[in-house]
Image (tube, rainbow, N blue to C red; front, side, top):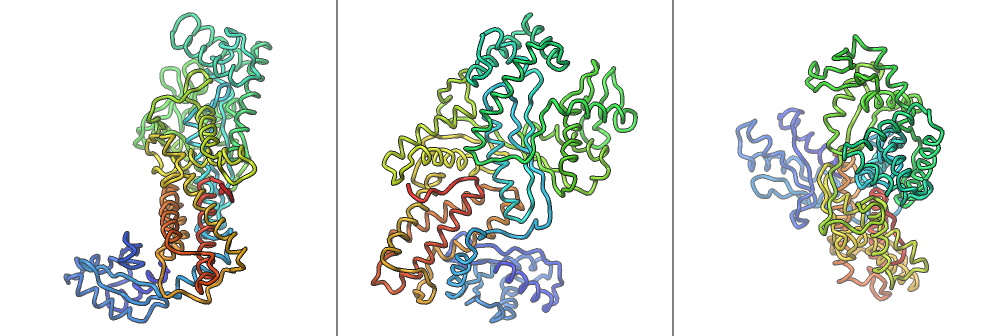
Length: 560
């Protein structure tokens, strides 16, 4: 309907001689009482033609009268807005359409026929998952799903670090503590001990550097064995977490695989893309308005920058046909990726017309300091998720389900994901466990509970042999009807703006509106002539909640 209104207004612009390039907006008013759509075209044109917005709005009102199907009336409001009110039949047909579309409701074709590469999570192995990687996973997964809802073919990549100083610190720590490399808790403690020793800058730091060199060169079988065992343990632990979070990667490229191809490319282009400086090989970023970065150190060691070049090469060997390549990492790496992407565009000229995008994530902090953790006395992804599950289980003790453990996990994941995704991407996140697990407003569990509540009402309607139908319409247009059909627009907008928080905000508004509706209306009353329509409406709301939660990476339990 938004597109239909935009087209009609553009046609009137042409008819009235205002031209074709008039940049106006058609949006939903913040207050549903002010209509279903509002347009600012009169105010946009006012400055151009030297007439008052009201005078121009009256011209449009005359030209649009009776021209748009399902528009019942158009009213001039405020300084010259055109407010569009949709007919009762429009909402009934939308409810019917939503229920007929089912699991595909909310999808669009904005990225149909295109392939998108998404890289996210990408943790340092040999220690528990960092909270930053957890945030990156949740944001990356939701964005991937938004692209899938836009019709794109999405290929997911994980780029874990399986070698380097982090691993060397852990290996050194294992030898120091005698920990079991098959125990993720022992790895966490080993890394803590190794990191403290390294930061003390004493002789232990030199030992760790030596271990790092030996691991890179594979010259010490004992060290290599410890590394391999620890990496296997970390990957298994990561796999368990990813399963809970609902992420499955198509490809995994480890850091140990990219040093050689990256260094080779840098050296091959030393003199054109790169240049030597004090024994190192650097990229002079100032030539493209960026900063200079080292790609091969003066000791001949490839840096993270060179590794990212090698990684890009391997990624393209696995998936050569793509339109957009996205990397989700912390916002502190924004300037870094500007340089890396500039180098990639110079090295890989065959990809000059393809898009490269870095999505920055903010930092997560807690309202009450650190949560308890058995993994090295630090907040990790594992410890946060574990503590959320324990708390969710306590809150779900009276649930109407046979599998409390499964429900607690789903509620914990919903609480965690929603609290992260309700913020704009790049924003810092203040995490409040109690608010996150609340079953009342602005939380993932609240959305899950609302859907379970609808399921309960629909079960009762089924028992009373009430089938959803749009035949007998109530005269009144319920507020929930004016909201639920907007879901597809919200999804498309969230995709275009890389803003999953818009989906989270919409779902919360929808759930609140449904609960207000349910408090006033009986859905399963046999004596109510409009009950079949209320059932159809409830089904449409449930579908929207389920599909919207899927976009956020959250499951919708049938019972709670």
